[in-house]
Amino acid sequence: MSRTGRPFDTLNSISDDPSLNDAPILHVDLDAFFASVEMLDDSTLRGRPLAVGGSGERGVVASVNYEARRYGIHSGMSSVVARRRCPDLVIVPGHFDRYEAYSRDFHAVVNDLTPSFEPLGLDEVFADLRGLARLHVRPLAAARDLRERLRDELHLESGVGLARNKLFAKLASRRAKPYIERGEVRDGPGVVWVSPAREAEWLEQLPVRALWGVGPATESKLAQVGVRAVRDLRDVDERVLARYVGSSMASTLVGFSRGEDPRGVVVERTAKSLGHDQTFARSLTGEDLVRAVGHHAGVVSRALRERDLVARTISLMVRYDDLTSVTRSQTLAFGIDDVAAMTALGEALVQSIPSRGAVRLLGLYASSFTPREANEVQLRFAGLDEGSSPVEEGRRRQVGHEALRDAIDDVRAKFGVGAVALASELGPDGLRVDRQRGSEPFGPRSGGESSSDSSGR
Ligand SMILES: [Mg+2]
Image (tube, rainbow, N blue to C red):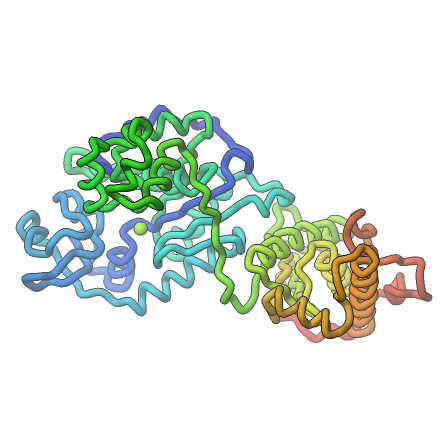
């Protein structure tokens, strides 16, 4: 898509503040990524037209900074042509180890927003924000914070798109970026939201080439059936289209032309730990802190379910106003992924932290993963899952309930009870931990400072 025109400027107003329902999917794309890393690593490259790629006769440009784009140089262009357009162009061979290192840091920043994200190459990420509903996250504010952190911490610029699905989120992030106008670099808006009400207007203005998966080859095949713009796709018979681009591409494109994109955010299953932490605008104590644990448990348990994983270890980290930190963790005999179990354990952990004043940051993390199927096999071996009858299901829940209560007792025994009072029982459909049963299942109720606090990193 051409970046020279600004046909979408009227499609968003500054006062728009969409809810998660209207902007559940976020796409972030780092600007001129390889070239930007090269400029960070070698400051003498800054301000000069720069390309990363092969400099020889057959070299191709992989990434260009905005100074080079002013000369009409773009990625995919032959280096010979690029040099002809700009004789001063600096072409460097590229350092993939550096890009990978920056990419890991990039993913770590996104992970602080939500663990429900899907990297695409080294410099793009899709994130599903729906798990953040209970944290009262506003998509636009989250997008702006994300850009700010990438700029402050990694010194990288980015464009962020928000939309109902991946198709529009990616189109939006592209519009968010800087662009060239009459040979000058202009700032983009940085964050762009595609309102569901205006999706049709967006599509109306796009060439097919702007759609995901349409490269030059598909573009020319589509031209043979008279399809040049996205709106042309609506008038063409899908079976005719399939003869040219294959049936799967044909149905994808027809779906896109109606604004439909069924692709979800596919999270990676290879992480060693998943977690969520938050620095509070106002430091928390007591019941507020316990409630915050429940919110974090919602985010983490959703991330686990998306990955079909269960976690045996749950850890909690708090940072106090005096900037000291305490971590607590507990490992279970079985894996969990449901919000009630995670909340119960998280609450026990937060109650065990020493009384040291208000808490400014709270994090909840899951680790020691097993694929969910394997966990179910394990439960079956333990006689906990003989079938799906209501009786068996009830028995399994009961055993799970008791095992969880044991784990919570262990937390009490190990750490004692600290600053925070228990706020609430568990939700109506989750595991209930009954305080009345047993002598003192949560340990001494009015314990003071924990003596077993060994952390404090
Ligand atoms: Mg990029």
